[in-house]
Image (cartoon, rainbow over all chains, first blue to last red; front, side):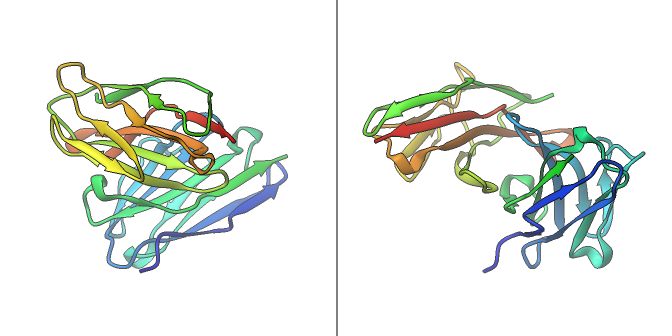
Length: 113
Length: 113
């Protein structure tokens, strides 16, 4: 069974440019999470989806970040415009509802220069 | 809300040495507890978990016991290998209805041959 797939693995962009990350969860998983992992820190939740509905986006900086999960499967996280402080690893995870059974993707490492 | 405090590293050991990484938690009730591992350049992988007090989770030679008396979930391994070099995160569910995972800051382990 394929795991959570994220792309790209690495991205380098100049500040003020837009960037997008894509996540394909495990088949059948209705809950999808985006986490932000700063260097030397543990991951922190940005947004959680139940099917196509964003049920918690309280930690998402909405002035520059946006996310969508069309048809309740794949998800895209976008930053526009990117700032130097956005350099981090963006992790996607999915589960069958309960976070205690969440599986993580390999992450996208973003570098903003 | 629920939180974890994890021993900060880095930790450097020689091969076959004994490993302990401390983790204590603050929680309402007795939520499941987790250890995740992140190998260089990779995403998070679930290493082990314990779902109730006095449970022992184990995997790949690693063990952790859920101790409610000391609110701890320390990770141990009797004989580490070079391949165990990674960052280890303690985690537990948090938020209303425990819908997300809250992680410790991570402990970098380096095992030298």
